[in-house]
Length: 425
Image (cartoon, rainbow, N blue to C red; front, side, top):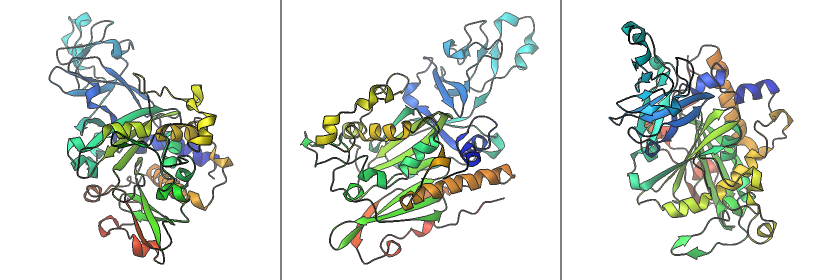
């Protein structure tokens, strides 16, 4: 459990909060590149409690700026995007992607006035079809994190973002929880194959190592990117299944995969304290990604604002009959199952009332690292620095090996990832 004070410190990420200021020191996926058209409709983007808009100008450059016009506060979302800038509909004030005011038609008699006006904007970088931003002090901007999947061919990856109705921490904790898959995601039988595609909309087949039995042992190692979480489950009479999760500080993960399965990378970005942008990047190592199968597996149906149509209001379309005959939850889609578990905790779960067990070890370690780092940050220390050389080769995998071996013998951390997570001044 956490004290109420530490839970508040962990979960509050708005402007001026300790965790919010820490998160602003890392690169954040904001929206997908294809959501923005040159001289097209702006897009609202809420990040870390800030109301922003993104737009692509005439030359194709993306801007991420404050939504409120500095003149009288009218929303620039309703403005006119043309001529390399966005013009407020109220009095015609115009701003470019750098946040500079380029025209004030209502004040033509005072040319110097325009030069004094600037709107808040954040630097952006388009990588792998995603618009990323950095929201911290420019002089502290870190190198862009070169995750493994960034180096793969475009056809080997697919990305999706979804608005999730709860605090980022409980969404991320779910990703570090090995044991929930054996219950929440368990399909009662092996799923049918149709048109050459394995159906996974019920969840995970019961013979998969994550579902076959809850991992009997877990451990956590310090790494130069955050934490490596290792689990050992029973594979067969002579072998164990060794699996890993990578927690990349502060809000990225590689959840568990096994035996060469397609990879997954997640990011959990607070919209505000009560909702999260959950990012899912699927990737195949050496072939084009199966887009249809991956959309089916997650089971999400989104509206134009990336909110789920299957949600708490319709009880995640849970079927009690399906719960008896098809899967553990009666809910279709792995993502829908995860969201039902985390959103029904409430917007911000009260961690002072928890009763954690040994299966919660990765979650405990993640919380400790976040709280250690944010308290050090409050004391004037610099944030945890990611090792980019390591990120280029990092992804989750899993193996079978002889059951007499320890996990350290069967599945050791690769040397390039080894480093303690001491706080740097």
